Image 1 (cartoon, rainbow, N blue to C red):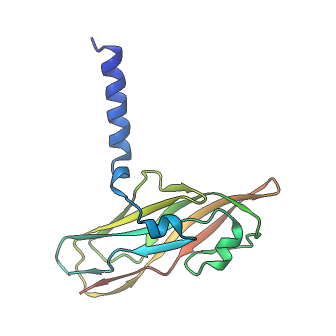
Image 2 (tube, rainbow, N blue to C red):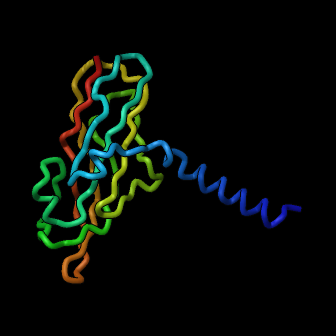
Length: 161
């Protein structure tokens, strides 16, 4: 019969496995200290060879940062004083065949002002430039009114040589 201590250890182990890759994303200081930013470690893969890279990002805390950033676009009006509650990465369109993506959080959900990363890994086949369209859902509030918007990041391009 399992003890209370072994049950707690099992639960903690299960939670760490469920989040899986959360501890491998060490966001660079320039992203943590900066304003809204996205930075790709390396943008080039070699065709028919396993590889990986990461895109690090820092999300805005307020709506005014969304309008001033050239890397995130949201459908609809985001008031300058709006508070960004969270942004969830829903899909990444345009990846070359053979590459997959994953967030450093299993839920791909980040609160406003948070930093994180997306890992791209696999064995891409076809040589080309691949502009990515990272689809997000953003939720925020302004004077107590909550609103969700569809957003995207379109400034990340991967290259397969």
